[in-house]
Length: 116
Length: 114
Image (cartoon, rainbow over all chains, first blue to last red; front, top):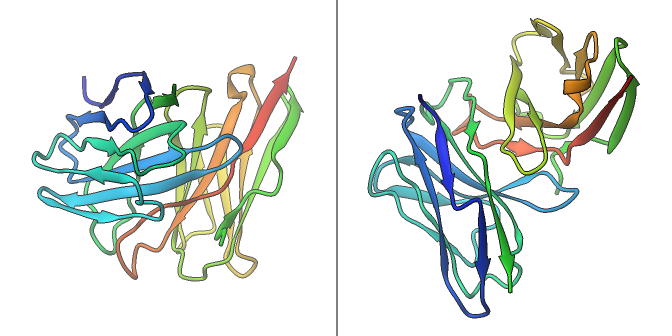
């Protein structure tokens, strides 16, 4: 069954702690993305990756880091530098981030991060 | 700078009637538009998309209309069903001029009443 999985569903972070959110896809998609959703707002892009071993900052990258060592995996670390980490985090993937193609992104179920 | 705007935060519609959701954008380079549906505590689900070379795209009960001159698109759901109650996001990207990062609107909460 192809899809995108995110874990955990809920995550609690203590002050000064780094936490890592997992995102895995078995759709053979090249591009992967991380978004953050806050109440009453749309999705904002944190980081994206078009290919293994390469990633780019999105609109709100400060306080976050990512890696893309495998095509299937794109973990997001929320560092202690992120002062307002409480949000719903969504991972997405698309077939290819090529110029000129109509790209549809498909989303995972999300991880809710709460600060203790 | 909000490049994609959904000015109606909520919409209530009777079951069986038409739901019309609106979306405006400011970036004239956007050439690919999508609608997503989202239930609470779940990821968005892709509904329908439209390329800027078209002005209409239909898929079952869902139709998206694009008016490029007005920088406006709309999603029509006919007939509306109780399972359509969700938040609907409009998204846009500039595919032909660079890599297609999506810009999302703030969403419209649709409630379908019996």
